[in-house]
Image 1: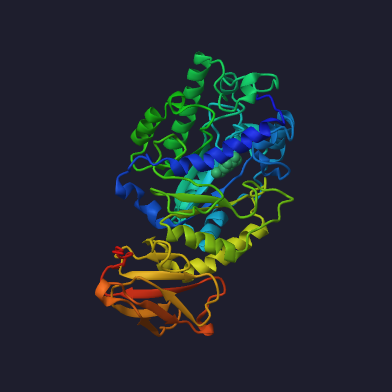
Image 2: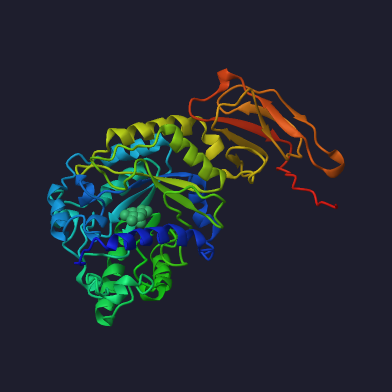
Length: 457
Ligand code: GLC
């Protein structure tokens, strides 16, 4: 068990910040075979599920004891409330599908070390260590697959309950320890190589169980920041995972060996340099929290999703079921509202690629793979007309997705410099969507986008 101290909070926050910053900066994500990643690139929306003994709802997932908000013992005793008595994964899968998701990612094991499957390698699991009394991962995988969704499993590399993990950490509880004050030194304390070797065998062993029993399409790693890439032996791990499952993909939290980047809780300001996915919560918590009612509106989530798609990325939207497995109504309402919008605008979302760079249109945009159809997402109520710049192609047709054809006209431009006019589009009130209106611009040929002409003087 890790000694806890309130002083760790800044470190934990710094670690989370690092987590969110480092992956986006990892330009070296492995360049995967395009067909292995294609479903992921096309998917646009996934649902993240944080479910574990913390779903009792009174403290955060794992961090509660790490940060000293509660004791380790009190935290772990929440396992006694983890009943899964209202766990109906088919209903989860139907709801996710209704929301428009194409995949989901469930926490198979968070940093607290409590596994949701009946791992043979530790007693800390839903079958042996909670009233749930059974494997919870198998039924989830089956339900998702029946619904046509891809299966993702979150897996924490670090394990704050495992004695061989805790024993190789530096002595962080002692406030007078200079290492504790120097966060750059953290956590490079004295090593115990045998314990670490044993821990790695345990880590690989659990992953092997997940791979052989559930064959996930995606493993979503987390918690790599307390050890170096070399200590984790991530290069070897990636190789091993590919041997176990050549089609499986992994996110970017295994050093530079992941398939895609995972910015967290913020919409990137510029498109990340490779395949990517934003993970974000519907309220402010990853797991269920009784007191957290700060839910995002459907409109805010729609916008977040469209902005991700507009930069070629996915949104992994997190919900927190309760200990019994029921998903709170507030989450359900957001997912249903989102579903109304995603189903209506499916063609503008799934299977599209990143749209226009900044400066051409004031909103998100996506392009069909053939690049001859441009979708404009209008988040704000257009004041009669919307405008898009830089399109050199003749425009064949403009319409509202799920609505009428719209009058449009290109005005202005400097033909002698190949700078096209502004395309002005009339959008009547009656064509507006309550969350975000999407305009479809069909072009003659693949998009030919003007760029700023060279200035001669
Ligand atoms: C952060 C949180 C962790 C959560 C993860 C999801 O790393 O610390 O608890 O599971 O985000 O991305």
